Length: 257
Image (cartoon, rainbow, N blue to C red; front, side, top):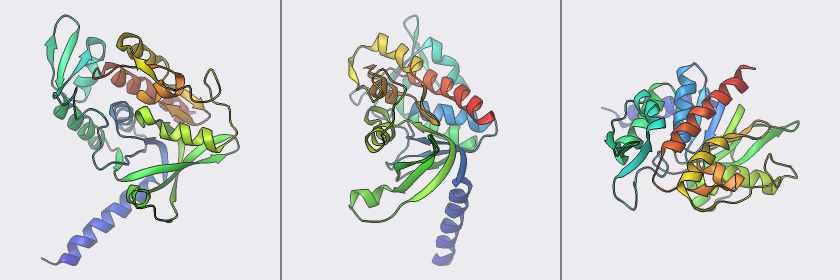
């Protein structure tokens, strides 16, 4: 056993993965449930999909369940997505299912990666590439560079479409709107801001507002609430899954055109 062989194996394989993502069909920023679902469905159809996650662990807000209680709720309308990803659940009352948050998060991550999704953790999107009035890719850097406030220049990845799946923070859309004189596809032309909790309305709105907010730039999951002024919903995740499933259809059309 030689330490240099271990290092060589890590470096060669990482660079190979990164090279594959230099020109992606879709780059999804944020590895939460909606982004993972959309990525999994698209990769299964042969699209080259890259996910960037600024934290160490993908999975978004799933892991903690509700206040650390390790279960989340899914509506029956989203049960087929759980089945597609092989995630177990148990019925609760007439129209809900309880899902262990650990198996939920890990199941979505594994389901996406085994379909060919390329996930990079500890990697953040700090800006977008824009060409002729259309988003054309992302500007990326190590999350550790940002944490340490180091003046290190980023790299770029091109893509036919970019998705803001960063959740409540809506980092991609917020930064893009602040840095450019653009009008977004929102009621105000800017991010509207997330509202307080109203689960029933929020679960419907997160699916309705999964859409293209600027040419080449899409939003899904909780990013939709921040961008379009929707309510939050807490530890019920059916809307997240259905948002990801809807997004996969929108992106398939976008990337096939």
